[in-house]
Length: 148
Image (cartoon, rainbow, N blue to C red; front, top):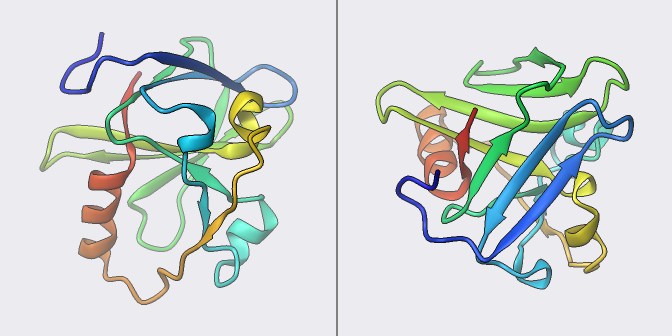
């Protein structure tokens, strides 16, 4: 179940407010060890959707098979933003990379109560000047491997 990732010691359940989109984050990180980040200062999309993100490149995100999401793409079209079809809340973002044959994702901090309760400071990012290739490499290195 955990290809190419370190053996997790924690399992975090994340879900949208209505519970129709659910995912699990397997990680070796304790809640206080995550590093939430956001580029909301320069990104109107992140401001509008509470885009504070967490990931663990050594962990694994597993999607519940019954998830009901609608997907939207913006800007470069590389990233898929997954919204609950019922409550319309942004839940996670994913990147399917054919070159690396890899799927990675980031999840909104707000969907993980156990991690959000740690009250971690949010690092401000400014990625508006990134090239498409730089953004792709950053995501592949820092986002969490995704298993559908």
